[in-house]
Length: 223
Image (tube, rainbow, N blue to C red):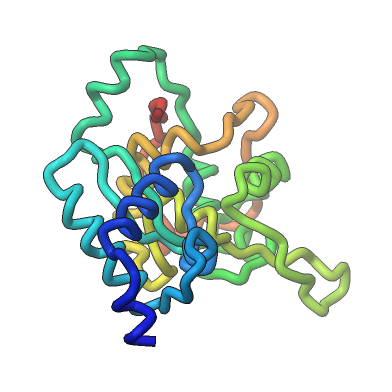
C-alpha cells in the first residue's frame, strides 16, 4: 500500500478532491471520493490529503468540514451576512413547538409521539412531525411493541450534516441547541410551518420543565 501511495501524485489528488467537493453541495464520503481515482487510495492517506486541503482553505471565505455523511465545503458563518445582501428577504419564523419537538427527539431518541407529549405536556401536532420528516431531520426507525404500535422517531444523518456535526456525541448542551440550529445554514433548512394549522393543543399534564429551548427561530438564505 505504501508503494502504491508513493506512486500517486498527491498534489493532483488534492486538486481532484478540491474540484469534486467544490462542485457538489452534498457531503461526499470517503468511499465516494475513492472512486475518483484508479489507484487504491487508502482511508488514512485520503484523510491526510483532506486535512491538508482543509488547512489550505483556513484563511478563505469557505471552509472544508467533516460531517456525518462525509466531507464538504461550506461558507464560513461570519461571512454569511454579506451573502444575504444578494437575496434580502424577511426570514420566516419558526415556533417554539418545532424546536422543543426536535430537541426532545435529538436528546431522548428513540422516542414516540407519546414520549414527546409526556415530556412537553401538550398534544404534538402531526404537522410538526411530518414537516421535520419532510426536511429529512427525523425518521421513523420502527414501532414500539405496545398496543397501537406507535412509530419510533430518531434523528438522521441529514440532521447532523445540516448542523455540521459528525455524530450525536457532538451535540451541544441542550440549552445551546437553539443557537446551534439558529445559524444561517441550518436555520434556512428548517421546514416552513403553517402556524395556523400546526398549533399544539394543551394537554391535561403540566408542561415539563426539563426540556427547554430558545425562542422562535429566524431563518436566512444560504448559497
